[in-house]
Image (cartoon, rainbow, N blue to C red; front, top):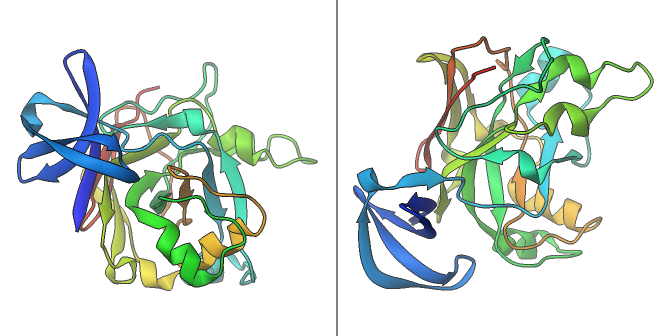
Length: 256
């Protein structure tokens, strides 16, 4: 298992693996051919960035049994997915900010993120599983009042694609068994979401396989696997923390 991070240190950016309280700096391509440089950087001297800058940022809706049952939704046979603006991505510690003039509800949604490590198209589930480089934490932030502002056209891309609405991080974990993990989300330290990932309707390999039938996935793309019960609005001044054991805690203030 490895924890891959991107970092800023002074006027440079780089990537590497977390080892205790330091970063083993690497060179090359994180997804193919990365090699340690021999430099070790104290974690305290660096600022962690979003661990990946996805070309495609895909989100799923209605992918957990408990949430589907609570909301009265039918169990989908395939992934119900949308494209989230890849430029909405921010890293640990960066502020979530709603659009100027927006005064409606802004929801957190803690989720497991799949990071694609190789180009994959029309993949079966074995190929899809092999294409998943690692796992990360995602907060699929949503401007709820924008989503249904027009009764004739639900605006998924707009409501979920605002600047800063895509926190990702703090790391990408490789070699982690997703099925044994839980997603926990805390607001100002109070746990609001705590659900098992093995309650997924469509598991990661099937998600990647089915999406790859419709769009080619590339290294660095991110798929957020959907959320379960407990997603609620945030209030100004709150800090939202998404924690998945083995990956870490993605913490962001909400600062309108």
